[in-house]
Length: 212
Ligand code: HEC
Ligand code: HEC
Image 1: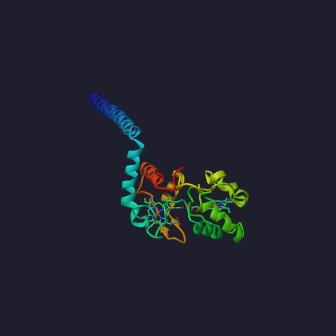
Image 2: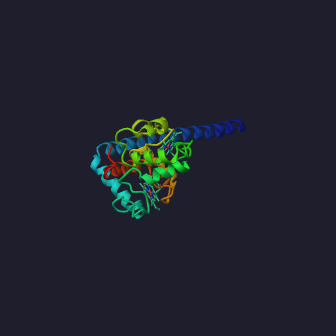
Image 3: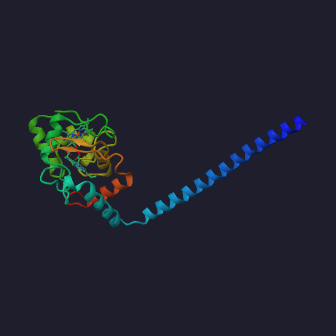
């Protein structure tokens, strides 16, 4: 008698465990399926969105998160923050050459060395860069191009684009923040996601003098 009771008891426990396992698996599978179709729907709704709409989203983010320092028009509030309608000013290039820089540690870990050219050459190449890098500059080709590349477009992990605010520079600034002679740019890690950064990038491109 005791033997039968023990057997039934064990069988009951084993069946309960198997049922529990089976239903849990079933539940996880359905959840995964639902997640996948939701993700797909999310992606499709973004694919259909036009560039103009992305730019408008970017503008909204800019007005709420960036304009208090950079100004409503992105021009930098009379020197309080970087003028974003232009890639970089002569004095900022001079400052970078003089002191070097290592703000964007996540994307360009080795940074830029200080004082690689003399003051006279620094004046000439800074003018060239601030004016949008039109034509050729011998000093640039010799001392800067090995890292910043042809036309200033930059190289992954080596040096940033210094001709335009491409998405990589923008993402890097937002991830690392930046300190310079102008002031301090806070970082936006955990505040903006990749999609919002792309939208901001499209909006920044729409500002004058910053179009590729
Ligand atoms: C608290 C003020 C402040 C806020 C808010 C702010 N910035 Fe800045 N930002 C600065 C300052 C100051 C600089 C100048 C630092 C530098 O580039 O030398 C700067 C520089 C930049 C640069 C130029 C970096 C470079 O290397 O040339 C970009 C791009 C930029 N900000 C984008 C943004 C965006 C986009 C937002 C909003 C999500 C934003 N900033 C919000 C103060 C701010
Ligand atoms: C060894 C590689 C290397 C060389 C050579 C080099 N750079 Fe850089 N440069 C960098 C890196 C890396 C950065 C990013 C620095 C940072 O993380 O803040 C940078 C940043 C800059 C910036 C600032 C961009 C910004 O948005 O803050 C300017 C301007 C610049 N370089 C100009 C020059 C000029 C002009 C020369 C030539 C005289 C030059 N660089 C030579 C690696 C280099």
